[in-house]
Image (cartoon, rainbow, N blue to C red; front, side, top):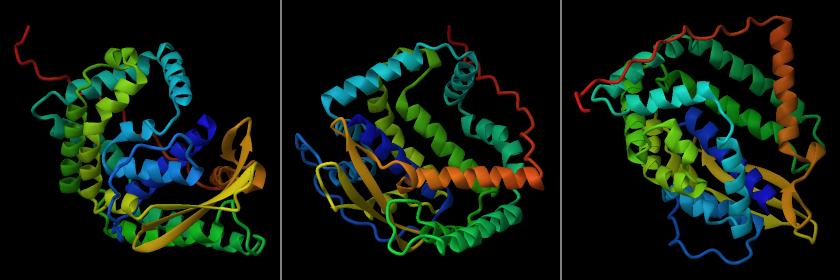
Length: 324
């Protein structure tokens, strides 16, 4: 079950973050049911719905509780192994961010650090690129078999990208006032977590870290709300239905509202060694996505100019409050 849960976690997170970061004007928020203890054995649709409800309640820990004890232990062991691997660069970056959040001028400093990145956003170019990809996807949809489900929905993704391209120009992604407001919420999220250093994070059990992140979720949602991205409305509109269920295969239909339109994603699942997993090959939507990424890289190499990395920014040292 861990493989399925990991896949669902990645998928739901991708939908939430990708849709959240780039799409606004959510609609159709539903009432969140009163949380109840999860059953001993849950179907894939129950797991997906449970994660959406947990994230809407700002309880990442409740989502983690949906894992079986065996899966929780396996993920905890994986976390420990990852944290045992030295990564000096990542530690410096995390330490800088966590220390910065403790300053009174943290939002201003974070805004200053983001300026080179904001300056590189070329909205007309980005909007045109997204529109071009949407057109390509709509063309690719003509080659999909009628009634095909489980693989990448080219037509659905293309329609979403068209709506995204229409939304982007008015989103204010480069607006300095919005950027500062969002930075303030990000600082509040870091402060709410109570995390102080990379060493603390490395030494922390996974379950404790997840619990510490719960209080940070409201501030993260507020940061997105600055750009009119209503994450809770997205999560509230989320639904999951199980169909064509058999001993070794099933189809889950995920529904959600984004950019004022209902969206649907079909996932084909197979059961291997007692665990539900995304179906392999062309039935896996990630296969289509990886092919699109490879094609985009190829097209860039044939004529597009690679993006230049942002100018290196020297992190602002934390203020010295005189404490020993």
